[in-house]
Length: 195
Image (cartoon, rainbow, N blue to C red; front, side):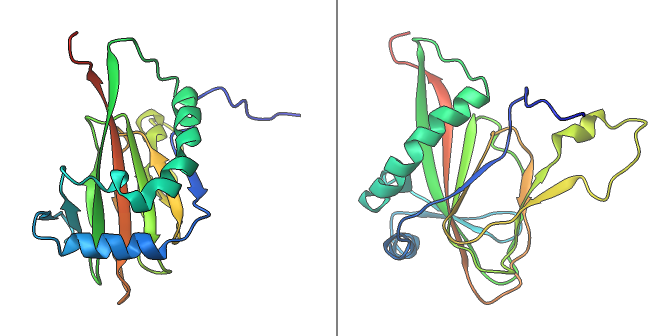
């Protein structure tokens, strides 16, 4: 009997936050209208909203989520075989994406970041899936083709998806009247002050 050996890291991780979303959705909606935020329309008209003096991952409303998510960060980093030296430090930044009808997100990476976490606060059916480029494509020369080089990551409200910053990804068009809301947290390795 043949079976696959799970000896390589797994680049896509997914889970479901078991807590309430209503207060998080309200805080994110209020954040969009705050006078100090930057509204950045991305390729595909998705609206990125940020204020790096008020990072969403530091909101009190996210305390329960952060407590739930923290153990998974270590598990994922271990799976990805990340090593940190004494002179390394992890810096987080975050923002909220809003996608109304017709909005999508074009192909992109988060190349300076080691980890990208997408937390779907409001994600109903037909509002568009996250899609990741299959990294095996770069090794498919002289092999039979497949249907697509893009793989769907089906999600719904409360789902959390983690991918490495190098992974090319995009988000399908929202074909509904329902606004898709996602909170994104990126982790970057920096050199500690004094080194």
